[in-house]
Amino acid sequence: MATSSIFHNVKIDTPEKAEAFVAALEASKKEPWVRISPERHVVETDPSVIRRIMETNKRNRETIK
Image (cartoon, rainbow, N blue to C red):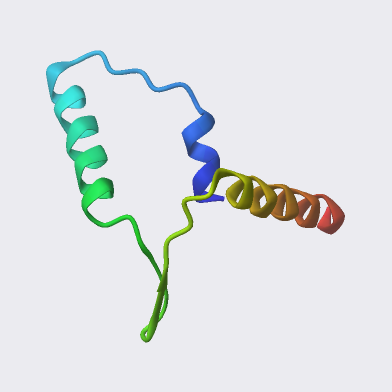
C-alpha cells in the first residue's frame, strides 16, 4: 500500500537527498488528488475517514493471507 511508506524512517544524509525530499513534498502539495477515473477525482483530508479506510484495507489484507 502506498500510504504505508509514510510510516518508515527517512534518512536524509546529503544535500541532494534533502533537496529531492523537499521537491517531492512540494510536488505532492501542488497535486494532492488521486485519479480514480478520467471523470472523477477524490481528495480525502478527514483524518477519521482516512484512518477508517486504512483499517479496512488492513483487515482485508489480513483475511486474504
